[in-house]
Image (cartoon, rainbow, N blue to C red; front, side):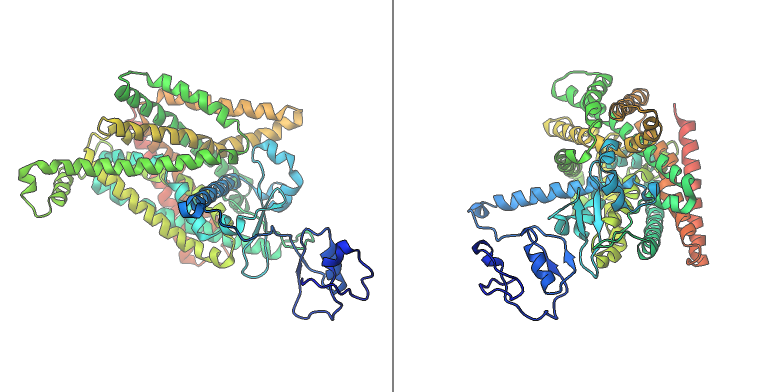
Amino acid sequence: MANNNAKPANYGSTSSKDDEFAVPASPKPVHLSTYTAGEDEGRLATLAKEFGLSRTRAPKSQIRERVSDGLETLNLSSLKQWFESMVLLDEDFSDMWIQSVYSAHSDQRTFDESVLDEGEGLLKSGRGELPVLREEEGDEPLEIEKGGELDAHAADLGGTLSSATLGIIKGMVGPAILYLPHGFASAGYLVAVPVLLLSTVLFLWSSECLLESWKMESDRLNNTRHRRRSSKPQRVMLSYPELAYRSFGSTGETIVKVGISLMQSGVCLTYLIFVPQNLHTSALLLLNWDISTNWCLAAMMAVQIPLSQIRDIRKLTVTNLLANMLILYGLITCLGFALNSMGSSLGDASIAGSSSHPFIHEVVHRFESLPPFNSSGWFLFMGTSVLLFEGSITLLVPLQEAVQKPSDRRKFPSLYRKVILGIVTFYTFFGLTCWVAFGDNVRTVMTTSLPPGTMATTVQLAYSLAVVFTFPLQNFPSLEIICRTADKILTKNGSDWGETRNVISTLIVIVLSIIAVTTMNDLDKVVSLMGSVLGCPLAFCVPPLIHNRLGRNTLSKRRMIGNGVVSALGVVAMIISSITTILKWN
């Protein structure tokens, strides 16, 4: 609003202190319908009402032009901004884990209202501050508030397709990729490649079912639901368990939540096997110390018990970001080792001189020597291929919810398919390359198969540290579901909930560690059984059934039959893989 020393006739006298806020009297502007209130203690609001303006917008943080301090020449400023952006994106990713176990129907209120009204109860349950979404009219981004204060970074970082892409990658790419080379060796390429492709097709079909279910239910709720009077409408937040509840009631919600809880506990179990094996190998190669894996497991327990008692997982944002960097370093280095292993064989004159492209000839030569089918372990790869998608299906709906613009929300399903296909392509390349390089003797934890040396040890330690940092985030959904269930029982008896939660988190780590001791040498079977018993229902079976139930009045008969076939294939895969894994377990 422009400054002017003239005062409106109906405004009265003003002091010299307020001269800068005075405006000339004028007719009501016809081109304005809203105003933005600043930090002026209501003066602009009073003036606006004088002109007949009644609609308000939330105060926005002022953005001033940045004065150059000379750091740009060293790119330090850009590096700092990039790091801050990555930290904020990791905080958003933590919020998605929080939302993945949230059910909006718990007290028949909107997600926004629950956050505002429950307050301290959310902190006690371990979720910390949950995002509040308020939707503007038109195609503008959602304003995201946390704890009632405007998040100035939300419009740029929290809900774009770029940040959604990073979220998809973070949710899917992890230590599980290191199990693929051994999985390919156990099954043979004639089984492994088709099974991985079939699993991808089934997962993409199921994810589309879940996204379409989200759209149907979100449109219905947010267009017809009675809302409290507010200057801005509220949007009902949905999740995988919430969609299951709206399809099959409490039974469906319980099945999904129990499945998510057990799946994430299973992932943490693999971590408790993965890290001790890596540390054992690293100590042996680096220091020539033959430390028992049980002692390494005890050390990891000592670290994970206090970390699991952290109630706001966004406090681990920096360590999670470091874990991502360490995983990236490990993947690149492992590929470098594999390619270097194949290139080192080119010194053989018979190989080098037999082709104008000796490297390609060496790769083909090694590939032809690999078994196309392994009758003794092919069944293990069925569960392993499903486990690759464990994080993606849980975070799918929160990722869709996090996209702000309506136009971007419509693009998200297509983007999701493309990113998943790109990741699976990289998985296939990584698994085959490392298998060809290290042969049939490649171990389940692939980093322990690297050639002895300082570089290999750094990879093993980097991955171990990354898994240690990632453990609390992976354990959170399971811990949250168990704690919320216990909360309903214990709070009625007046128990100290804070201490009880710490006890539960400690018991989870101890129980998983005991199981890890008994299965330390059977990681491949643990991975297969988890993917079969837990991954198949969550990723393949339940989403098509939810889609059929919510869309029973709108879906075509052909689509409903297709959903039924996909769900049935998931059941068949679960039964075959589970039974064969159990029968072959020594």
